[in-house]
Length: 308
Ligand SMILES: Nc1ncnc2c1ncn2[C@@H]1O[C@H](COP(=O)(O)OP(=O)(O)OP(=O)(O)O)[C@@H](O)[C@H]1O
Ligand SMILES: [Mg+2]
Image (cartoon, rainbow, N blue to C red; front, side, top):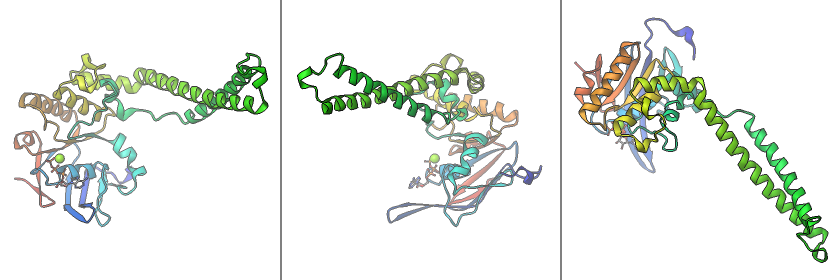
C-alpha cells in the first residue's frame, strides 16, 4: 500500500462499484450490484439492511475476507487499492491494518480468552522450526537404528541362532522409523510449549491483556470460549479485533446475538473507542443499534443508499 497517496481528504475506506454473485453449481445468487461506500477517518458508519440483503458479504469484501467478482470495482484503504484478488497481498491488510468482528464470534475453542484475544498479533512459527524438526527426525532415526542394532545384538533380543544380517537390518530400520517418529512428536510438543510460553509473556500478550481488561475480562483470561456467556464471547471477539490497535474496525452485527442490556454495554464500549479516534463500520439490521453511528446507510437491491 502506498501512503504517499494519502491526504486529509482521502477517505480511510472506500468501496467502489462492488459486485458479487455467489455461484452454487449452476445456480447464481447475485448479491451486490455495484455497491459503493466511502468512510471518513474517525467516522462511525452503520450499514442497515434486511436479512440476506448482503451486509455480511459487503463487509467481508471491504475487509479483504472475500473476493468480489472479476468485473467488480475496488476497495481502497487510505486511497491505496487493496489487491482483493491476491490473497497473499491482502494478508497484512486483513491481519494488521483492520480489526474485524465476525457475526458469530469465530473464537477458537481450543484457545483461552487471552490467546484468542491476541490472535491478530501472533507471530508466525519461526522459519527455523522445519529445520529443527528435520534434524530431530534424523537424530531420532540414528538413535533408533543404533538401539535396534544393540537390541538385536548385544541385548540378545534376537536369539543367536535366529540372527541373520537381514533380520538385524529390518529390526534396526523399524527402530529408526519409530525413533524418528518419537523425536518429531517430542520436538513438536516442545515447540508448542515454548511458543505458548513465549506468546503469553510477550508484547502481544500485554497488548491483548490491556484490551481485554478494558472490556471487563481481566478475570477470564484462562477461560475457554465454551466457559463464557454470549456477551463475554462477543467482548473477546471485539477485544481480539482491537488487539493489533487498528484504526479501522469492521463489525458484523456486534450485538446481534445479545440481549438489549448486554448489547448496550458493548455499544458503549465501542463508543468509548470511537471517541478515542477509532473509525467504525458496523453492520446491523436494528435501527436502534444504528442510532449509535454518526451516519447510517442502507443496503438495498445490492446497492448502498444514504439514509436521511
Ligand atoms: N458462501 C455463499 N454461497 C452462496 N450464497 C451465499 C454465500 N454467502 C451468502 N450467500 C447468500 O448471499 C445472500 C447475502 O448473504 P449475507 O450473509 O451477506 O446477508 P446478510 O445481509 O448479512 O444477512 P443477515 O442479516 O441474515 O446476516 C444471501 O441470500 C445468502 O444466502
Ligand atoms: Mg450477516
